[in-house]
Length: 250
Image (cartoon, rainbow, N blue to C red; front, side, top):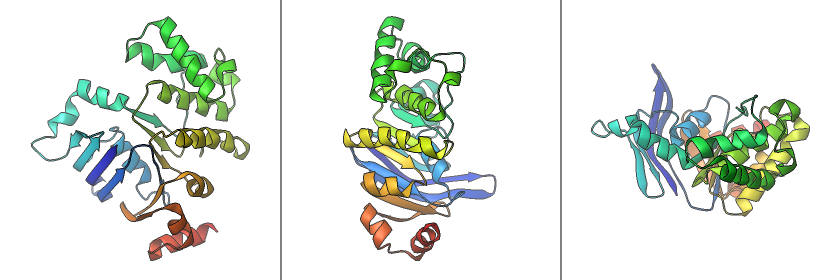
């Protein structure tokens, strides 16, 4: 469903990603772990077409959506085409990024009315449907200031899901939450994984990774050091860098 080959990204003279390749099969959950500053979020943003890689390719559902070779870099610059590809990738960030002057339902509706060009009545129905999916249909008419951080993040998930993406990308979705609110967001993500949503998740929640992931990727120094099923990564990692990282967290 989602494939990257030899992705590279630098900010000025500092390399962030160095030749990263991965493949995410449809209906599976891939979890990316690693130290802060290892390139995890940059990798996710490149997969989500929010950052322009310096080199490499991104393929979504068999269609090449980014080619970093000089002859094809123009494809990334075509805003209409880029917007179409982005709409097929749901992205949930650390911060909720909800519009404070809009209700939960209105926040979810916005992409439907502005991007999908759906009428407001139909968009409202879709919004409520997806708020129900994350357990928040009763709060459809509340504003973000009237909701907890966990509820706001669930609204953000509903907003992404309402666009019916092919892949959901999560960038440390619980890192801004108080400890008691983390599990309500993780439970929504567990449900999505069980339902067969294709997901790529950057997280520090290693217990969640062990429970939900089909594959865990350990990123360090801008490259994928090791990728394997969770039981291998957590119980018998093959690379010394992986062992050192995990031992520091135990």
